[in-house]
Amino acid sequence: MDRIPILKLGDALLVTVQVDMHDQLATALEEDLTAKIVAHGAKGVLIDISALEIVDSFIGRMLDNIAAVSRILDADTVVVGMRPAVAITLVELGLSLTGVKTALNVERGMALIKTRATPRDDDDDGED
Amino acid sequence: MTGELGTLANIVSNNEGKILPEWLDLLKTSGILQSGRLKEGELATHCRSFLHALRDGLAGGNSHAGHESYAETREILADFSRSRAVQGFSPSETATFVFSLKQPLFNVVNREKGLAPAVIVQMIWAITALLDQFGLYTVEVYQKSRESIISRQQREISELSTPVVKLWKGILALPVIGTLDSERTQIVMENLLQAIVTEGAEIAIIDITGVPTVDTLTAQHLLKTTAAARLMGADCIISGIRPQIAQTMVHLGVELNVISKATLADAFQVALRRTGRAITKLKSAAPDNGKSLDEDRVG
Amino acid sequence: MTTAKTERLDLRSSEDVIRVRQHTRVLAIEAGLSLVDQTKIVTAASEIARNTVIHGGGGMVTVSLRDEGSRKGVRLVFEDKGPGIADIEQALRDGFSSGDGLGLGLAAPGGCRTNSRSPRPPAWGRK
Image (cartoon, rainbow over all chains, first blue to last red; front, side, top):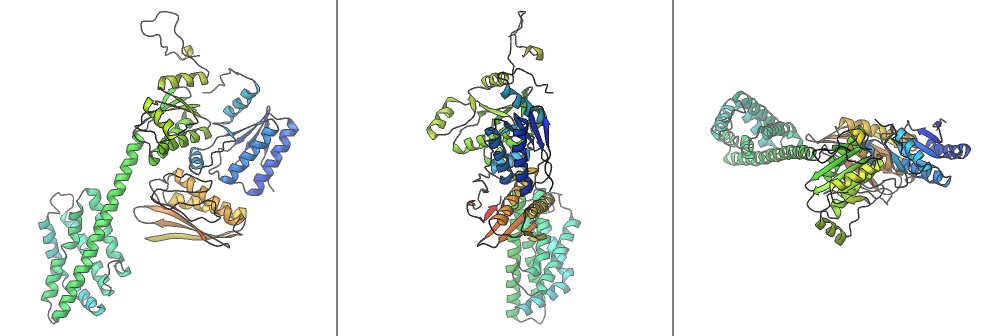
């Protein structure tokens, strides 16, 4: 069975979800991520969902779970790249993923994770 | 009844040459061609198609306009009706197309030799009932077309009346004018989220100075909008809360779990601070209020 | 009112759920629904499809493209082994108005509400 690749990006782990995940794949991802957070002492997890055309309650729950598990392991989870149509649908369906931090893209997501590590980070994160 | 309708269909078939011109004349008298939006040739074609379809339907032996055998008849009428709706004809003018066919049909039935009076009466009744139903159908289709034109226009107005403005790098402003209903909220969300992506915005200021009242429903819509923006990684500030609105909100127990400020200016200041910026006065005494437009000065 | 393009799909595994999503998406695009409306109906289809597989003991879904002349939409009818039938009809060009969800529910003005707690809720979206 395919597993979704997890990359190391500095202090954080980056996951890019590109396929229409079925249940087993999602569960495998949760397990793999948990293992890697511990193995690398990661401070953050970035989940890039810019390729996802829909996010249903199942994926929503997966994201919540990952966020909860990482929090226990003292890592931040940031979900990045949600598509506007997906955001509107989630809000209309009442799934607003309150336990999860979000950012526009990987770059901003990384900035969020770094900010937590260093209080009052005055970096202009090079946007433009 | 079936037998009579079959005979009627034949009568129509055989007398087409008399029915069509008479019908067309009546229509001309009614003024349907006056505006010039509909040409005579076009109208004649519509009449012919409708009459043929009606005749075929009659041959099916059913006297209800909703029956399968009249499917083509209805389709022709629906097309005709929709086109008239778009062209700006009135519903009566449109229905007259059908109703004015009654007299020509009565005439040919009346003149037909060898029909018992009772049969003639039945045929005339059948024609009346059928054409009445078709006339009503025409009006219904017309109404639906107008409705869809109106709702399309409403959407366009909504889109035009909720612009998204870039105040500064990464800071957007959304002035909302008028009531925020669920349809409008959809549009607001779509515009806002699109702008967040395009501008890479981190903060969106939703100014509700132009919103007359904020009841629980409006508050829900605002919350939905802020939640959607948050999912895209942008924070929202609500500004333009008038004293009366603040009071109403408290009385209704409405809670906006988001920073709110009285004025757009206040909200802008907060937004600047959040994005690591501030407005400073220029050292040299400038003739106007020292507000700097130079980006470097904002920092 | 004619229904063009109808297809019945099995709902037994999570791969089937994915297939339903894809099929619904294709028809939604053909019906001319806006991107947001497409996303909504595909998401709704995914929810109920998964429900059918996991809680309903498997079943079928009928996905069809509906054309009423002035508006087009997509219709999904879910059947499972349990009692009751879920029926979602979204026939809109103009937008699917207000959903306030209880997690899985869809509500529309003038339409019926859905109770998302029951395993196979009947749901209507219509404008």
